[in-house]
Image (cartoon, rainbow, N blue to C red; front, side, top):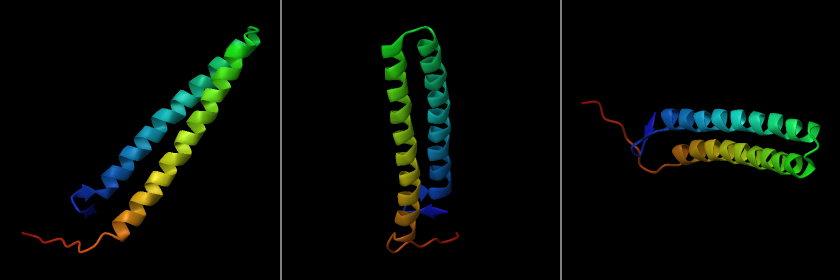
Amino acid sequence: MCTNGINTGQFSQMIDQIDDHIKLERRWAHMLAHQAGDAGFARTNEKLHNVQALLDDVRAMLDEAKDALEDDAENAPGVTVNLV
């Protein structure tokens, strides 16, 4: 559905693509953190776990952005679609 010149379905899918990418990066940060911890690199392990937590925050914000997109599309004023 297009609302005010934005295809909201496609926009939502693009947010999902970003989320998938962040999910993959979170997994890599998790794996690297454990490798660093197993090797005795405590500070590196800690920093990578912090990265992991920040990426969790990013994913939560992306969910909020999708909810906001739906709300904005529902509340958009004066949207009409004309077939030509």
